[in-house]
Length: 132
Image (cartoon, rainbow, N blue to C red; front, side, top):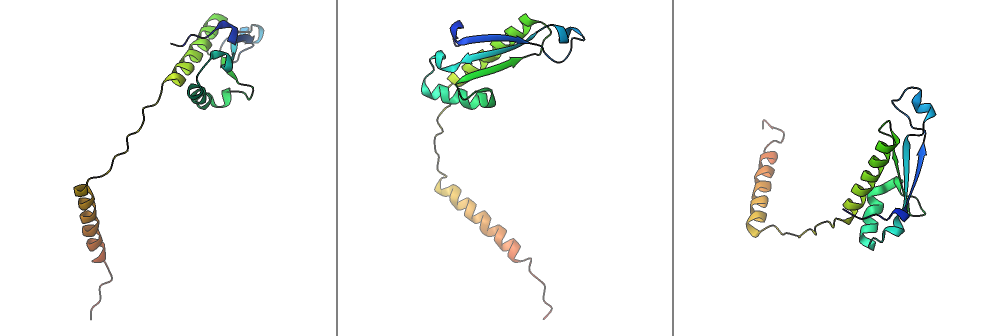
């Protein structure tokens, strides 16, 4: 799990939508988390992966914006936003495995050609029938 410095995080609480009745109009329960990605100290590859994973949640200034409004309390939404941030950064830190190129064997190529020839002869035999 990546350690995210508190200095890189800014929180703002907004009026949320969804369940809560009249309470939702009066209380700012939704949590907007803004994270300065440059302050995280990620290596360039991890930063590139984070940018791809974040998509439209990443601003042009290098801020990652996470909006959590799933729950009815500030504390729960705050915890949810931080958890989602941790998951996103952890996913960016995982290096994808390199794909190892493989070649089909000569026997596999021969089998493929034989099956293509067989199919070709079946289709060639489907032509118009002439009664000459």
